[in-house]
Length: 71
Image 1 (cartoon, rainbow, N blue to C red):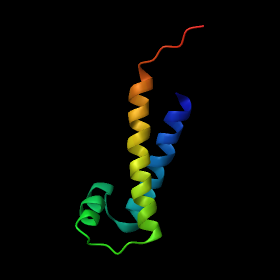
Image 2: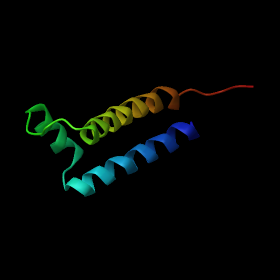
Image 3: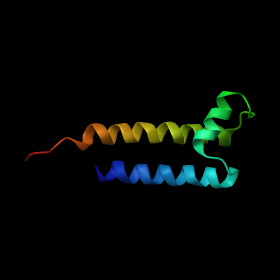
Image 4: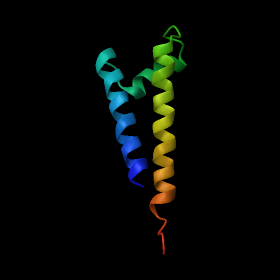
């Protein structure tokens, strides 16, 4: 669980770096990207990848957060 929480924090930090650099929220970026308002670059692909990773990590945390481990 700690690893998932740490991974989420690290991914959120990377996304904030992108948002700060481009002065654009991830939600706005994805909306505009889907409307073909950006040329495709490696950096933008990374941003999309980080966004997808965050969603998967949060989903895993939701799934495993309710699991109780017994000895």
